[in-house]
Length: 156
Image 1 (cartoon, rainbow, N blue to C red):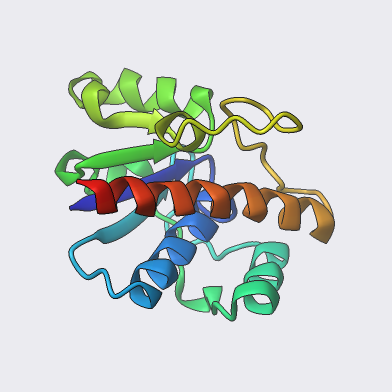
Image 2 (cartoon, helix red, strand yellow):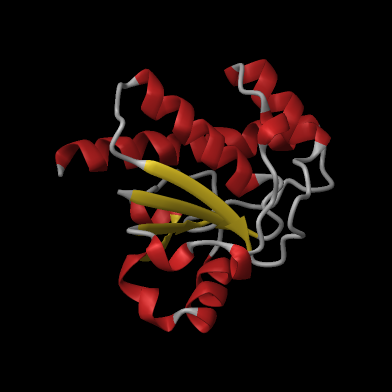
């Protein structure tokens, strides 16, 4: 199975989701899932934000230095089995570009039926330009989604 995460620049949300899912798959000895990410408006080769790099290193021991942003138009999105977007706006943008991928495109929260009361019901808000605490909150939402993704895949 091939899973792709999508956000705006592929330097915060989708990058963190990508690397966190890779780590969780390794920890759970799951080796039949490949993980990718891209951004609707990503600049190819951009590096993750300082804040995402710091939060991922401190909380998860994940080195984000190897991550390089990929623009959706330079990605292998058409090969994916599952496409998970940070927001509904990203989902709409994906479907505008690739309407044939509609049956496998969701927001992360939509895919795992995320229903936390204190968070947006469908979107993971962009932490770009905000403080470390905002990034921590963002990655906590992403982690809950990733746990749901793994549970859902294990049931198949």
